[in-house]
Length: 562
Image 1 (cartoon, rainbow, N blue to C red):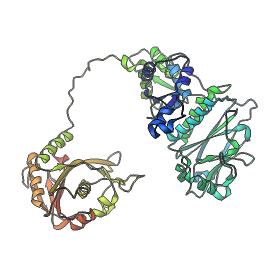
Image 2 (image 1 turned 180 degrees about the horizontal axis):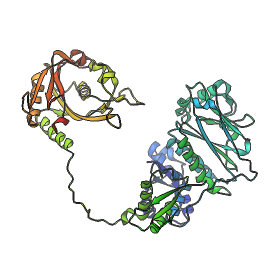
Image 3 (image 1 turned 45 degrees about the vertical axis):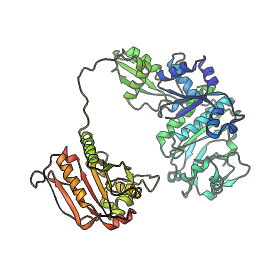
Image 4 (image 1 turned 90 degrees about the vertical axis):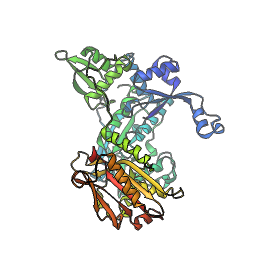
C-alpha cells in the first residue's frame, strides 16, 4: 500500500479542527485507511543515518498514512482532506467541470505518427489562475512523484510534465525525432545539450538514471514543442528549463505521455482535480445507475455513498440509485466497488453479527490433507523435508536434465529479474539437487523429499497452465542406494492402499529418461496411467548440479490417488 506523509499542522488546519493521535487513528480506520506511523523528518533521518546526520533536521510532526493502492485521489494532502471532510459531512462532494478559457482559445496538443514507435499516447489539460504557496507547490510536486511510482510504474506507462503556460504558446506538438536532432536546456541546467548528451548527463543521477532505459535504445526519442519550437519536455526523462514552474506560476500546462491511454487519462484527472481547488474556478463526471441491493433503504444508501464522494440520489420507483462517478475515482469499475464504499461509510463495526442461515462445517482441502499425511510418514521413514523455490532457471529444468526446454511445457516469466528465476518449475528434482549441492558438507547419507506444486502449460485451462502436486525424494551417498528409493515407493503405495498388482495396483517397468542412467530407470504405473519415474541419476546430471557422488531419485504425481 502507498504511504502518504502529511504535516500534522497542515492537516489539522485543512480539516478545521485538531485531533489527538488516537482520534485521528480512529478517523482513518472509519474511512478505510491506516495511520501507519507518527514521526518527524529528524526521527526518520536519525533511524536511517544516525543521530549525527539528523542535526538541524525539522522536528515538525508527520503522519504517515497507508492508503489503498487504487485510491490515487488520496495520495496528497488535498485529496485526503477532501475525502475526510466529505466523509464527515462537513462539505459536499465537489462537482468538477471542464471550463473554457475566457478568450475561447482552447489549447491544442498535436500528436504525430512518429510517436507510435516510442510512446504513442498523450493527453493534456490546463490549470488556469492557480495560486501556489510553498506547501501547495511541494504537495503538487510530491503528488507527481507518487503517481510516477504508483500507477505510472516508474514512468514506464505514463510520464507527467508540468509547465508554465505563460512562457510558451500553443498549439503544442508531440512528436518523435532522432536523438541528434533534439537539443534544449534541461531543467535546472545552465546550457543546452542534445538528447544523447542528456542521457549521458543523467546516467549518474540518483533519481533520473532509473528512467533512461525506457527510451535509450529507441531510434527516435519523444519530444514536445510549442509553436515557436521551444522544447517543453523529452518524456519520460526531463522537462525543459524554459517552462519550469514556480510558486509564482499562475497557469499550468499539464501533459501526460503514455503507452497506456487509460492510465494516462486517470493520471491527468487526478492531478488537475486535486489542485483545481486552488484555481479561481473549479470535468463532467460519468453517470452510472445502480440497483439497490443493500439492507439499507435506497435513500440512506444514497446518503452513505455521497459521504464517499459519490454524489447519489434515488430515481425511478425509489429502488434505483443514480451515482455520479467523479474523475477522482478511477477505482470504481464495477457495482461491487460502490457497495464496498457504502459499507465503509456505514462502518464495518456497525454491521450486526448474525448467525448464518446455512449450517456448514469447514473441511480441509482433500489434496492438502493427503499431502500433510504423506509428509508425516515420509519424515518418519527417515527423509528430511525441503522447501525449494517455485521458480528456477531454464537451465535447471532443461539443459542440466538433458532435455530441450521446448519439450518441458514450462511457463516462462515475461520479465525475469534474475537468471535464477526464469520459468516456473516443471519438476521438483532440480530444487532438491541444488539443496544437496548447498549442503554437501553435511554427514552422509542425505535423504531429502518435497511435496509441492509444479506448473505446466495446459491449453484446456482458462489461464493456459495448471498446478500439479508432485512428490519427489532423493538419496545421496557413496553408493546409489536405489533400494532405499524403491523401498520408499513401496511404503508410499502401502500408505495409499495401492497393492503391487498389474490389474488394480501399481507396477514399475523399465524405461529410458535422459536424467537417469541407462538401464537404471523405471516408469511407475498406477490407476491406469503413468504417475512418475524412479532410478539412478545420470552422472552428467550429477556433475551439472556440482555433485560428486551417485544418487537415486523418485518423482510421482499424487493427485491420481485422491
